[in-house]
Amino acid sequence: MSKSTLFPIFAFPIILALGILIIPVNTDYNDHALAVQAVELTERWFVGHLISAIAFSFSIWASREILGVLQKAPWFTPIFISFGAGLYAAGLGADGIGPVAVKASGESAIIFFDGSGWWVSGVFMAATLFFGIGLFIIISNSIQYHLIKGIWRYIIFVSALVFVAAPAIPSGWGLYGVAIAAIGILFPIGFAVHRTA
Figure 1: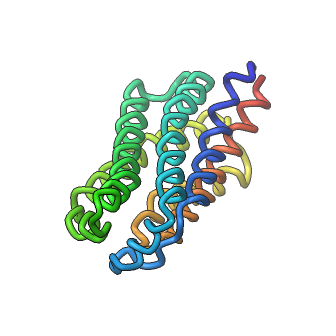
Figure 2: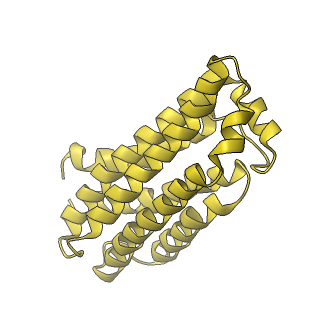
Figure 3: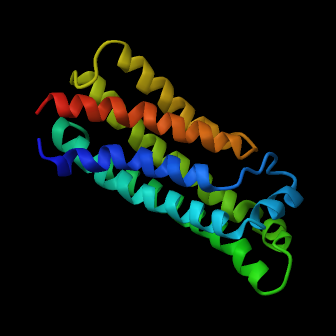
């Protein structure tokens, strides 16, 4: 097993967690004034979203490596992961750049948050749907073909549920759930892939 096989599997959750930790926490997505306060920390807001978006490019690479080990997953699995990752990157790009660009124009970033509504939320919902389907296919195949065994089966399954449910929490704290869940899924799979070498 080459290091290039393991690298994206561990890189995705680590880079995602780093990006999420950098983004200033907005404790209530319904309060756009709080979002504006978070955007005031412009560099952190922008860089955190950018790093998180980049992390999802690693998720495509990671899924390819995992599917290469499994060799029995449905052929369409990468399509779900790729669509989901692309939509997450688009949503993170819009959410990271949009309010910063509005602020740079001399206007209040609240204009972005008041106007984005379902545009950005809808992209994130579609991302969660597509990525979640791909993720559950990978997890079910990892369990079915005995890549993941014992208690780790439950840990990655619960982590996957958290990964797809946490974005529905109307607070930036939900993102921490996503980060922890990504680690809870990819680390056990990464160590299992390493064991098969």
